[in-house]
Length: 153
Ligand SMILES: O=C(CO)[C@@H](O)[C@H](O)COP(=O)(O)O
Image 1 (cartoon, protein in one colour):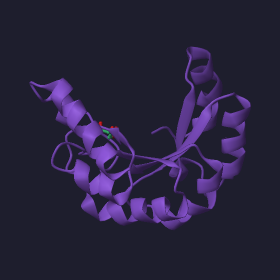
Image 2: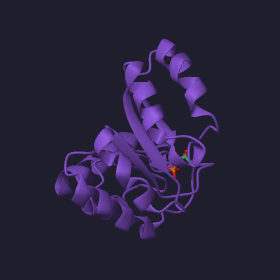
Image 3: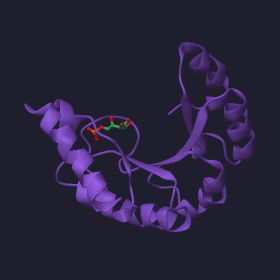
């Protein structure tokens, strides 16, 4: 998470990024997320918005139709190894209901024990660190996460 995402659009584009996801909390209330969305598109990248656990999904819904991807944080941003927050699943369900084709990514505490909850709610993309890097069978965990997503989507 960065506090001024706009200033990273060009550097990331130049570095070869093809998509750019910014925190809604870093833009509102001072700036209009639609301006950021357009700036990312003008730079030729796909665009996503991420919300922290404390941000209601209702704040994100108005922009869902303008996005390639949303990211629902299921831990507080900061570090790996935190516990998955199942009470974030209604946010994913609300987004999936309203935007059937949207890529909905989930990040934080995602692993073999939590993938079903996330995927059943409607998540179809996963960020996972400790579940993979903490395993002796990284390939197996990745396959399991992929199978979990495919089972429900
Ligand atoms: O960036 C963050 C948290 O700030 C996340 O991407 C975590 O790093 C995910 O780690 P695990 O919860 O999968 O260990």
